[in-house]
Length: 138
Image (tube, rainbow, N blue to C red; front, side, top):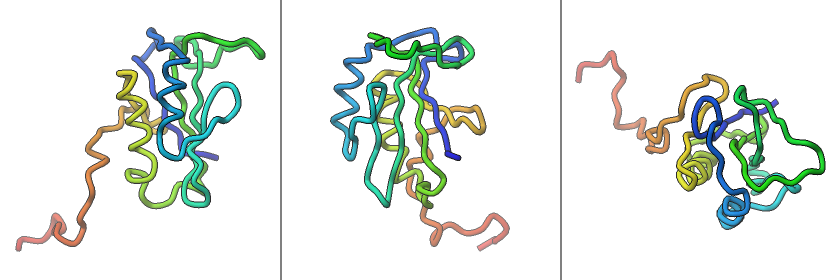
């Protein structure tokens, strides 16, 4: 089981980006290592682990790649974080990498569980000591 994100151009995956250009960018991010021919992994075990798969998908988001075939362009980036590696600070440990990839290609990061876009506000540090509960008046 994993916590999953998808980086996509729009709801129907209608645009592509050159895979070679994205490969060059992703492999330069901190903690990133190649993971097979289709992707990468953020590997800083035991602290962090996130698979980054560069894919060709249908309008519905189903992978349509043929085994053994190489693709020059991709239209989807899937991010998988095993629950055992999730930790308690996803905004610090994983979202900066996810947003770096999304920003580089000009696409949007989506939370697969909710189906909605992830806001960059999630990156803002939370200072729970200075925030009073909603029910306090002072």
